[in-house]
Image (tube, rainbow, N blue to C red; front, side, top):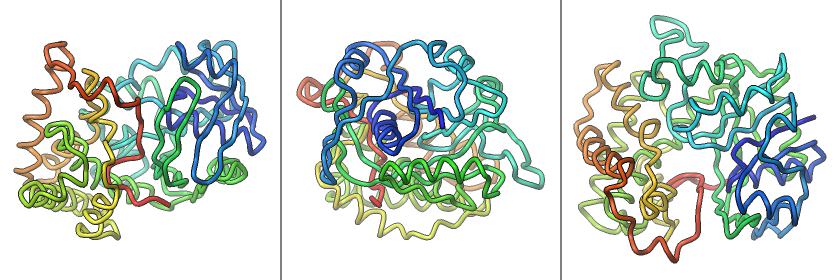
Length: 348
């Protein structure tokens, strides 16, 4: 099995190292000092489950790899529309794209029946730009329940969680999902095939939609947000509105708000990937995590005043980050680059 990891950062390199350890023919696509370290020393994984080193092929040029069976997409969702040129050399007639993204995916309404069949979520697929780069029929949904960070070039620190839930947007248990799941399991990861991957999307989104923007706006950890009475109430209100949107789309995640808040508290000083981005003056992964849910609220008639308010102030901050007029926080200098599974995500 040939697998290319496009975006071999914290999550991508961790998954790629595990797949290589399990016997897959893995190709990491990266750049800069991280790529040079991967070429020289492989991927060094530091984990409470046991450290290991894997030495898959690493390159900056997808044409050097050629068509593969699977592309594991480790990019942030805001980069998907621009990834077409990198994806094309990797695409064969049956190549599947395992999209390990946060938030609402561009394929969300693919394969559903009724009046919403194949509807485009404009916020995450503006003008169909992502669907042109990654046709929805190639997509395998993937929800990541692992927390990792780049400790240094070529070095991935794995903190907790090994579950990568996958599923077809159409709901079938396909041969391509079975084969990919087996490869992940061979590498020591959990990779259940979910009959409705959308439920996992909303379970994780309950934490992302709440703690990612709030942590960035307040420069606070999840435990700090939960420990303050006012921001805890704000987090609860955001989760309540999120579940209302999900319910109107036929999804009722099997996890309570209090359990999600308790999971966030247990994370302690966990700093979300969004907070890390803001500290470095980088734009937030906001559209798919928050703004898209406001769009879905408009579509379904759900009332989401709290989400709208947080979205408004977060979008203003994001525009300043895009314009380069928001100064990075001083904490960034001492904090490693990170790409975590998601705020308050129960590890598995």
